[in-house]
Amino acid sequence: MKKTKAIFTIRSTGEDAYFAASNSVRGFQSYYSACFDSARIGRLYAVKGGPGTGKSRFLRTVAERGAECGWHPELIYCSSDPNSLDGVILTKPGEEGIALLDATAPHVYEPNRPGYREELINLGSFWNGALLRARAEEIAGQNRRKQQAYRMAYRYLAAYGEITATRDELVEPYLRKKALYAFAEKWMRQIPEEDAFEEQIALARSVGMRGMVTLDTYYANAKTAYFVEDCRGSAALFLGALYEIAKRKKLSVRVSYHPLLPDRLDGIFFKNAGVAFLAFEGGGKETRRKISMRRFVDTGAMHSGREELNFAERMRRAMLRGAADCFLRVSEAHFSIEEIYIRAMDFGAKETFTRSFCASLFQA
Image 1 (cartoon, rainbow, N blue to C red):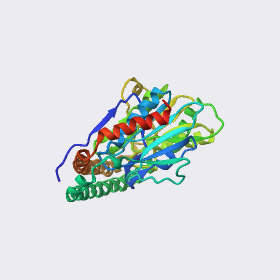
Image 2 (image 1 turned 45 degrees about the horizontal axis):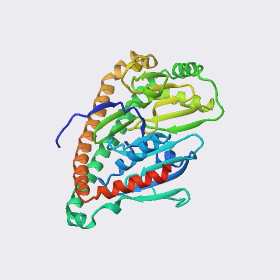
Image 3 (image 1 turned 180 degrees about the horizontal axis):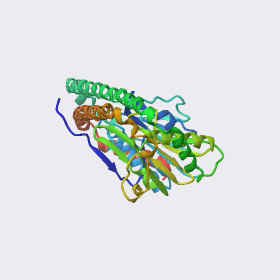
Image 4 (image 1 turned 90 degrees about the vertical axis):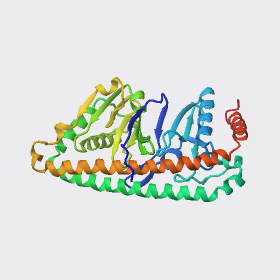
């Protein structure tokens, strides 16, 4: 298998942007239900169509037109290809929220309240079926390669999860949990109680066809952002403690779950206070506010087990590199399929439909 270095990038979009799914140690992890079945959304449009049919461009155009008409767009990027959009949520004071989402695999979404809340948009209406049928064998072959590469990637990620569990078990005796929880309580004194706990799931990171990508939204939106510097997995424990206190204090939070390890947080943003605690770098001056977790791990006492721990860490990195190599193969097959569909599309007709849809949606 051809090896490539895992890519780690921080992306500044200038948008209210996040992910609503991830490629994780459990396979594909979707938060679509939490994001799109929210009570704040009154209308939802499920967009269907194959790869390369312009779903992302359609979502982008609707978001841009909505912003021109006074709506606030939340842009939800694809966890496998963060250059593409998977969804848009539009909000405006005094109006019901509007959502549009890519409703194709792996995040299939079928309307359960069709017509009065949810509608289907089929971009397949603008493709030439005869051209696609002529290349059916090629499409099927590329799909098989893509699915095989995904299976291999998920095996590497599952191994990453097992090795992480081993690492955590080795570290457990050396964690100063009481001190860590007391430290979390101290930090939370600065945030006043509110009326009701409310959680919005918004992942900051993804691992997929373009490596590990981090969106800087949390750092950009927070008045005060703290980079929680990890030590042997203790940052997640600290963020989990903040989350439990937030529930007790009935706070409104936006949370980012770890893209690979969905049972733990890698970020929490207290929206009304404007304060964020993040276990990932975000670029810019904000990262100068740093909280080190090293004091909560008795690193001196773990000397006898250091070799085993370091081996576990090397194996975790190796499994992540293996997954990255597989995702590279996914991308090669995926973009080959896209090219076929692009050649079969009538984008002129699709753009005419997009303009008509936006005019009707925003009555402008």
